[in-house]
Amino acid sequence: MWPESSAVCGSGTWIWHGEQVTDDATGAPAEPEIPKLDKKKSIIAGVITIVTLIIVFAGILPKLGNYSDAWDSVQAMSTVDKAALIAAIIVNLWVYVFPLMAAIPGLKYKPAFVVRQTSFTISNAVPAGGAVGLGVQYAMLAGYKVSSAAAATGIAITSVWSVFMTLGLPVIGVVLLLISGENPQQYLTAAIVGVVAIVGAVVVFALILRSESLARKIGGIGQKIANPVLHRFHKDFDVVQEVVDFRSQIVGVVSKHWISITASNFGMIFGQYLILFVAIRAVSDGRSSGLTAAEAFAAFAISRLGTMIPLTPGGLGTVDAALTALLVAFGMDQNDALAATLVWRACSWVPQVFLGVLTFLWWRRNAHKTPAAA
Image 1: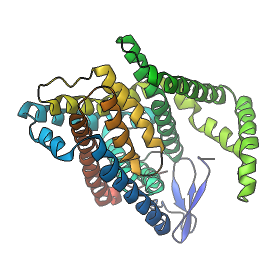
Image 2: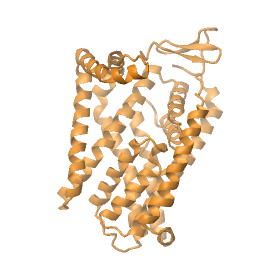
Image 3: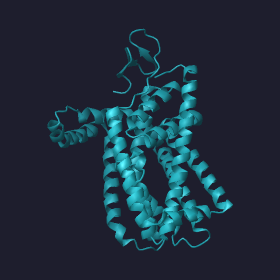
């Protein structure tokens, strides 16, 4: 599917032949075109995003803490705390690149950095920007002479592992609470559901990778489940072939590099959690935050489930509300919890979005200097 596919672009069609993108009209190398935003979908998504943010930041968060008091806590941060936050931001930006490098063996840090930071900005700051962010990744990787097959494999793997991380982290968070002597009874149900979900997903994933015949059987089950919905909307979608194509696309890389892929994704999560941990200590201003490291991680891990609710880009707002509520539930002062969440969001989102704008502009300026390859 991926090595031999085509996509309409401008006046011609790109033909993917394993190592080269060519224009069927001229036979010359063609530069991938960045997909354009669907205006209607963008407007709808933008309205939903704005409404959600108003509800969260004007309705929900003020009930969990006072903005004025939270801002006082932020202003009271010491120079050492601010320096620690800057260091945490740098670590987060540094480790965020590694999952793509693990999923595309041989990809150097510099191009991986440009691709990851740019795609983060488009996917997390632009309403309905996910599809465009995906297209930009393909175009950028092509410009760095990454084959279409390798690019598709890398993007697919990072997407799958992101889901695994989101489902698995709450389970790890509850386990850490148990090990540290906490009694997270109210979260055990969620942990059990999480265990079932992550184990089920990993088992299905492993069976798909094990053999093509198993992939076809699983695809057949998926087809039976999907058919009623597809028929209702008059859609025709071959689930079996998609599953088989997905397997052939990623099986080689995953079988050889699954340890580095998993480790790099944990490193990325650690970078994001590190900012929250430092923020909690910073806004407490030397006072006891009432939170252990295990409780902070559990709150962070569970709140990340909000990224799976497609109301806002990157879970903006939904994750913040969940995180603040969980920090308070674990015993943190309300205003400190609100301040920590706001600092975490500002330090983990704003610098990366700003950096992504710069990397995109830099890439657009220099893209013509490197001939695109599939």
